[in-house]
Image (tube, rainbow, N blue to C red; front, side, top):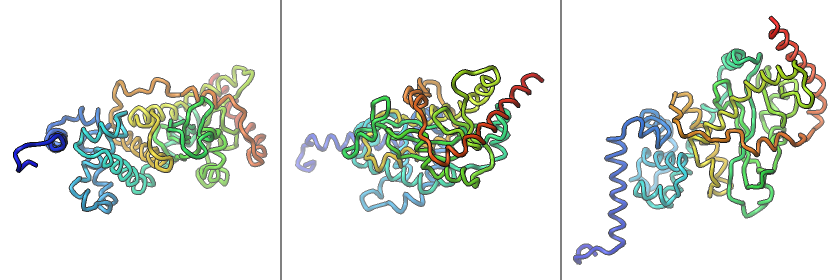
Length: 357
């Protein structure tokens, strides 16, 4: 059509997409400063390039004849842009000068590569003593982590959709996370339908089994009232509280806030987790897990969490409602209640004694 002397509308759209390609190669890669990288990709250029290098073994294997021209850097950039913004697939496609389907493929390729290559290395317990010392400075002794669950909005699945309606009334998937004193994820469990109570998610997780067997670490973790009181899991006193119980709750709450802040920063950076994702149910857990890995990378690298990214309600109304419902009990949980209460009371007495020194 070009050789015949005119350009039809399809050809004009082609050139518009070429201009967008030029934008990535000549402007973003060559001109953007660190603040522009941070605002749009949630990390500085150096961290981005390091991430691309870490993911290259998996992404190189996924090259096809059609996609070979799309560099690893561009695929990672497309994925991060989609994860970090509420932009539609069409919008991201136009931004980078690629097809809409290419954006979808890039997001899942990069998410799978992050989970396969980095999740075992980045979402890990690390140095337990450093974590315990960190929580001790914050006011709680022998603490190895804080646990909580958060709801990730999704579109209603075609099958068993009612199982995904949470107590707030929208479709969601549950992310359970254990975090260290700095708000980095040390253990995650994702994929349970939103209708399932936090305590049930926890009881059926590998983390619960390892803690119950004493093979994870020999110290305590902290949870909110939705969780079971266990010898290795402390939660607040409820009901009528005297000054000693209020002091215990204050110490616990101060340290447990770190997990709520971690969820806030996770969703503030990777805003795909704030909207009803149009991904398929089988792909959503992969994307959530990838975002958790990226959260840890940004925190470890000291990437700035910019003003304006805050999620206004870090502890969602859903979580408040979840905490009010009676927790499901099991034989394992019920049998441990007495010993756990004794440990909690001992800690309460310690806090009270320290307070009078």
